[in-house]
Image (cartoon, helix red, strand yellow):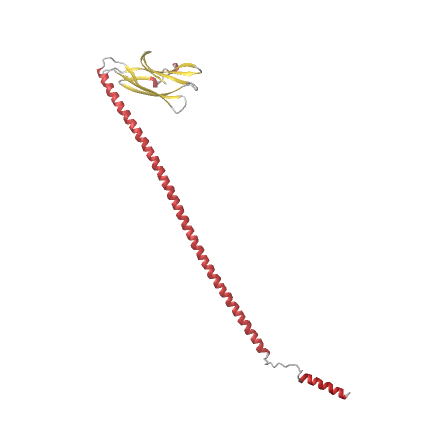
Amino acid sequence: MATGGASLKLKRLRQRFGINAPRLAVRTHFPWYLRALAVVAMLSAMLILAAWIFEAGKRTATFHGNASLRENGLLRARVSQLESELARLRDSKGSGESNLQIERATHQELTLQIKALEEQNAALKHDLAFFENLMSASNTSADAGIRIERMRVDPEATSGQYRYRMLLVNSGGQRAKEFKGTLEIVLQVRQADKDVMIRLPSRVERNVGDFNLEIKHYQRIEGLFSVPPGATLKSVEARVLRDGQVRARHSLAL
């Protein structure tokens, strides 16, 4: 038994210190406070590195953000400038078109005025020649009398309404007496397939002042008359009366 126990001890010693013994690792021993200091230093370095990375990223983002803001500002300013230029061009175009329209309207108006003046000038020349001939004939004529000259009847814009014009001439010369009488207008109209005669003024309007005449040498007569609705004017006759007798007459067929 003693021999067996010694063998067992020897075997254990061989396993511990022999070839089959476990390997030993020799390590330097550091105190715990040095290890804690190293961990703190490492954590501080990591925190500093993280803070630097964050600040660098922040500066980079701020730089790009400011650049984007500046670029957006420039683009907005350019867009505003282009919009202002477009509005100015539109206003210029509108002003040009308005000026062109005004010039055209002015040209047309001037053309109409020139045409009206030319017509008026021609009418005045015609009137002058007519009155010169009239005065010459009056001075050489031995017969005194009243005449109806230059009678016209024109339709007005209002349906059924007409304007009449005429010149009454007392051809008695410089020594002619003043003629006093009345004017009568006889209308022949077609109404309901019948010819109807209308006298102006009517019998109840015989004392109308517009139809009373007092002529020394000549007198222009102008007025309006209307025909019944649906009636067609066929002819107009102007008569000059004195003491109920016709002294002059002139008719127009329409």
